[in-house]
Image 1 (tube, one colour):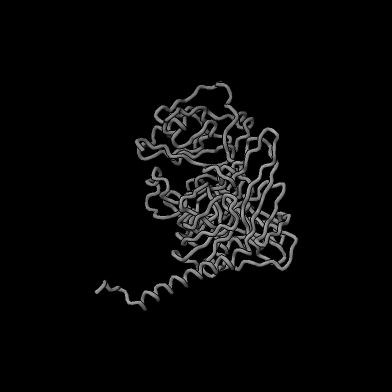
Image 2 (tube, one colour):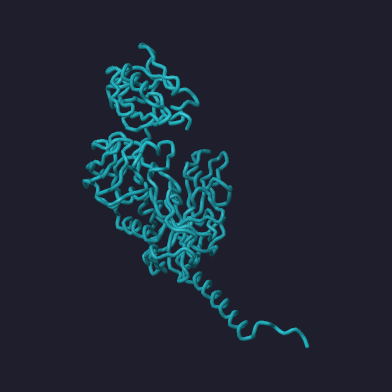
Length: 467
């Protein structure tokens, strides 16, 4: 007798049934979501070869169809493509800010073939969200899922127009949640991206990421050309929260303290200097004229609580501050050299551009003797009132760095020319003698803590030998 199948026919059929059900579930997702997805064609003036840095960020490698095509000599306009999805029957559409940034003209194509001119209603660069409006009625609308309920491992579907292939549908799973710090924009990072292995390429940017019910869990965004099974999406809750404010015509305002921070332990060089402290957020820099500048907060402080809520990472601290109102007084619990302090700071408004403090003007010609501290690679001279005024410095006492030796301890810690050293290991520096004295007592193996004033912003450096 011939070979008998080891799988009973009923089971084989049932197995096929499951696959058929999955099959039709997948096709249904496409049928639900595709009509709400739009293809966005963006035209920009061609001002020569220099495309914006954001373009380079989002389209750097590999070069492809959706990247801006650099026009030849005759300066043809640059065209690029992205995706978006309809959120209101009367023509409001969500997409990525970077898709429409600097656009002179935005055209939108619907699944049914109709084309519309779109106008940009509002944008929020910090979260990379933009809202467009077209003149139409009775449009199909995408439904939102609650992105907080998304579970790692659940199916995820992306739809968009990668490489000019309109309505490309890809699937995978949610590979991770709460991914942050993918792009740092001026010390501000949007938190909590969803990560998926559904294929996301340039041109998918701004399109929806859906669940098995065809509901939107996020907006696909291409981060730094990371297309290697790594797709990221802005969660639907955040997308919709920002989107609704933009539709209502509000400018997105965010509270801000004006500090650059890192989680304790991120920099192993300085970890030893926080003996007795497990967790917290280190204040690296206080920006010039920022809200925190007007408070008693200092660089090298470690923030452990915001209004009583514990913070252990920089992302958590940022999230706590974002919950506050602009102009609200916030009480920070701070660890400073073994003591716990409470410091009040009144929040300000997060500016669009945070100017990086950097030292451009050259220090004056040598009129006074220089002090060379060779083991650290620093050359300094005493700060005079006249110099402080002429260079518009925020302090009038200390020593000013006139040179930093290449490959020295100071260079490794990013000490810059024109930084004013105001304190060494807790000792105030008023002149060269006090600086020399403090350095002689300092132990470079343990780490020497310098407080610096850099063009009005306050920061610190730890010079540590053998690190």
